[in-house]
Image 1 (tube, protein in one colour):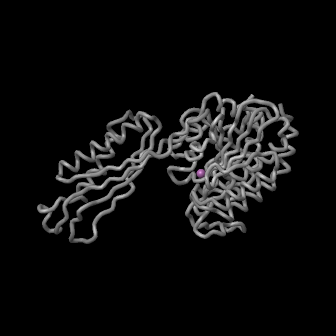
Image 2 (cartoon, protein in one colour; image 1 turned 30 degrees about the vertical axis):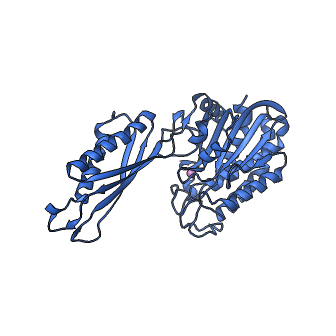
Image 3 (tube, helix red, strand yellow; image 1 turned 90 degrees about the vertical axis):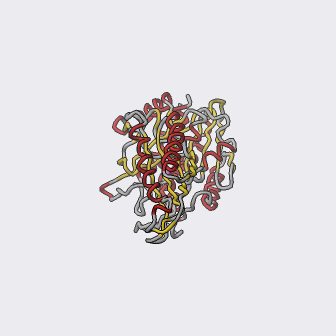
Amino acid sequence: MIETKNSDTFIDEVKDQVVEWRRFLHQNPELSFEEEKTSQFVFDTLQSFGGLEVSQPTKTSVMARLIGKQPGKVLAMRADMDALPINEENDFDFISQNRGVMHGCGHDGHTAMLLGAAKVLSQLKEQIQGEVRFIFQHAEEVPPGGAREMVAAGVMDGVDEVIGIHLMSFLPIGKIGLLSGPATANSDTFDITIFGKGGHSSQPEAAVDPIAIGSQVVNNLQHIVARNFDPQEKLVVSVTKFHGGTANNVIPDTVKLGGTVRNFSQEVREEVPRLMEKIVKGVTEAHGASCQLDYQFGYSSIVNNHELTKKVEGMVQEKFGNDYVEHLPPAMGSEDFSAFSQKAPGCFILVGARNEEKGIVHPHHHPRFTVDEDALAIGVKIFVNAPFELLG
Ligand code: NI
């Protein structure tokens, strides 16, 4: 068992450096699958701590293993490293130097926090039982995502438990969001092409109008949510693309539709594309057109393990106090942390980073998004305590 005073002192010592790392990463954002400088920085920084086995499971990801003196279980802790194609509009002095690319989701903070924890835990190596595995993941923002690749490269082999942290702009600083069970949605996408027959707009009888038929398809797809599933079931079907036509007096040959489906259960997930196929085929055929449906399964729902989440909650109460705990409802968002937590019991922890007094209020992926940097020390403290509190 670790002395709280002891680890808190180490965390205090690394706090300012974590802020510096976060600002450096913020200034040097890289897009998904292109995190070359970022991963090199993470690799070199981890190497400098000493006592870690550092490797690159894929081209732009990093893993570090801290193997304790005594045998025991393996805890994996994950941070993501990629940025977004956004033109930053913040006015602080460490804004993105890579125009058009921005850390607009807080992954700079995640990476800095996990680096901070790796530094502290390397100093506490003597007290560690088992292994702590630090996973610095590339490409969280773009499906199919980096997590699957890292799992395929073996980073979860032998892991007993896995945790991850996300800084959250909707949650005020001083709150740690937890929930047991399904936390984020299954996130799938679809593309539909409707093949009609083009013609003159004044002679619709000689054409098969894919725009009129496409409109029917959009309306009928809403029946999936409204009429095919239990109203208690959480399900979204959104048509977000409708492309077709080139001129006011021409009925086009084809239109293309596309969109998103979100839900929480595997049964619903598998049923939606079957219904969609039936509806799209039925409507288009009824009107003399034909269709093609491409359905892509994206990130799976994160299902937080009940026992592990209870242990995390106990740790938060003990190390931060009761008022830090915020029980949250499931969110329709998606995260590829699920690829790790499908391999071992997992818990995804949300750390409040909103601060209205400081004007830190913008949502994730907004050009003025940022985090209250005081939240970084909270994340470090969770990561530092986790190996001692969760594995025992
Ligand atoms: Ni994110």
